[in-house]
Length: 493
Ligand code: NAD
Image (cartoon, rainbow, N blue to C red; front, side, top):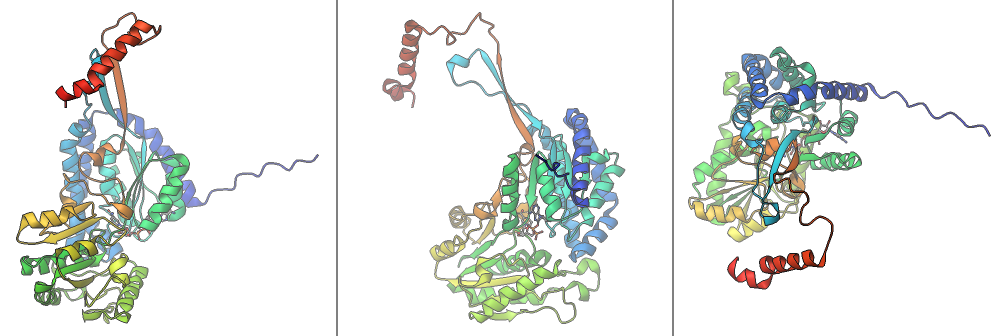
């Protein structure tokens, strides 16, 4: 019988081959890096920070050119990454210090228990286009400090910033294989999931599902930072002027293309009209980049990605068709088609896309609500759960409301700024993700936990080992009844 030869493995696409080569180089370089003391790795990260700060102009030029964001908001990305290096540089050794829990079982009193954090190996970072520095190099910072090598696959929409970051890492004396950026889209991302030991993904919920499904094939752990539909609740006792200024900032920063942007606003009836009028005044005062006298005074940038502008147009058109009123904006700028005018909508309801799906643009839909209960019910009427904000002069009341919201983060009388509070874990509930960045968990997730149990007594054999005898079993049962039975509970609750 003729047997046809096994089909030769087809050549991988160039972007897939590049991912394989990058991961192989990273894997070869990682053990030496992972074996260094934390302080030595931190020193290297500080040298990297010096390079980033020394190249401020180049970093900001690259960021603004590939995203369209205004210069001040590009600077925020750089400052965030530089600060994150300091935060984890100072605290990382403590977060990753070996733990020695005290054994709760008397049986283990002669054992030493230890929990060590060991680097995973190669971390793959897959990033979105809205924050090309923060959400690529930023996520690489704790991964590197934990002793991993990192391969970044930035969005093909904004591929240059992460590449610049990798070059500055090498210029700072970092081994080039430890921090690399590869090009490509879904195919490169998929290959990185197959090859890496851990995936830090930031992007849409739809892609997040695909990432998790692919990672399931190799049981690769993932952290997913996904989309949101963040509610803002303005209670009747709020400082309306502050809330309105916060709404403009939190809804329009980065042209609304921020995962934790304010995406919908619920205002208690008595202050609704006053709040809307104040928001309109705030929005009218904003300077778009193409009219600003100085790039540092520009407040509204372009949107980054043409399909995103079309999505915003669809959401606004759907809202208008269902009865929403556009109080300002509601169209692309006639002067600059990538600028979508800051838009305020009223008469909105939960039938509209703009209140249900991620709009990710400079749009503030504002809805009047009867009371706190209705605001909470509507805020929770979403499959997402990334962030939220509550505004009230009564901070206790606002906190009470916040604790009833299904959201991973909630600001009281503030917005967005929680992203730079590195002490706070930031992660989504429900369809906004799995896992967190920041805080101790934001670096520990890049490690495998290894448990050690060390016998300190060195007896010939342990009481619970073979042979089993009725005498030993009787002793075990008496001890178990004493410690775990009903009688003891009265004393040891
Ligand atoms: P996206 O999901 O389209 O793409 C994200 C990344 O995944 C890109 O690098 C893309 O090339 C890659 N990718 C696409 N398909 C893939 C696949 N099948 N396998 C592996 N990788 C694949 O997201 P986007 O449009 O670039 O970013 C916007 C989204 O990101 C918004 O939904 C926003 O809310 C979300 N986001 C979330 C956070 C957060 O922290 N939760 C932060 C920023 C942005």
